[in-house]
Length: 98
Image 1 (cartoon, helix red, strand yellow):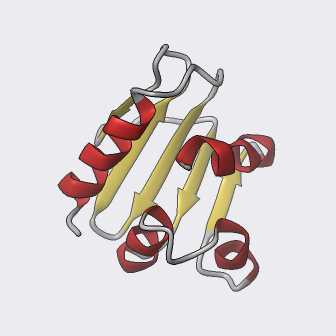
Image 2 (cartoon, rainbow, N blue to C red):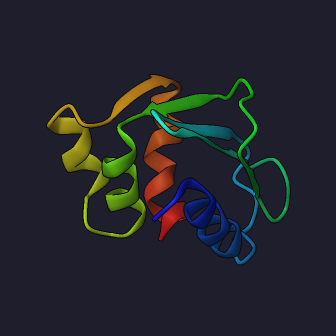
């Protein structure tokens, strides 16, 4: 999966969700995916903007996370996922990404 394919998949999923009041950025070695949860429905782009919460991981792990092959909590506990900013926002992501 490419960054563009993942972004498109996340845009499609976000279009079915309601706003969650925060901004989130997934930062990978191949680019970023930015989710503006202040919009209703949330908007998804590849803009590298400041966010309430930034999740950093290798692109392959990010693809596995989005594809459902890697659990977010497992990724965090094993060091594959690093969180900067508001940890509470990161906790909201489980329900947002499903």
